[in-house]
Length: 149
Image (cartoon, rainbow, N blue to C red; front, top):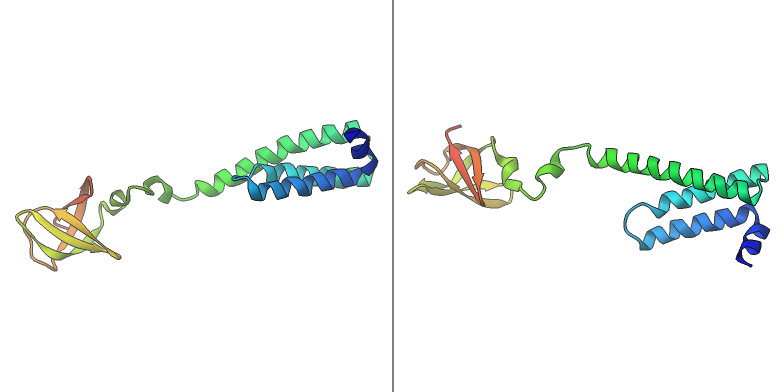
């Protein structure tokens, strides 16, 4: 019964299925159903142009699904790995190593503070006066270890 209804709609069945799958993408996280939906829409357009049998349409849809998913993974992977910022996303202190900052509070008895953008970081190192330049050499927990620039 469903097969007969699907066959009677012809190319429109594939286009409707494609739009439905693209709509499902709004409810499901990720970008998987989007590629399947695009494959179904393309199948419908090819079916409308060439008048394929339902078997040929199903085979074309399967091939286009595989191609679309592989292409989609390639597109999303290349975007996500373009920069190196994601490497230290949850380790902000690691991204500060090697940078030079001005002491906000003097280092007394081995402890002081620096200002990084809108936050203040605890630092350890040799005693220095407020306003001195220091270079971050490593991170120990949430404390930055500093030395001469």
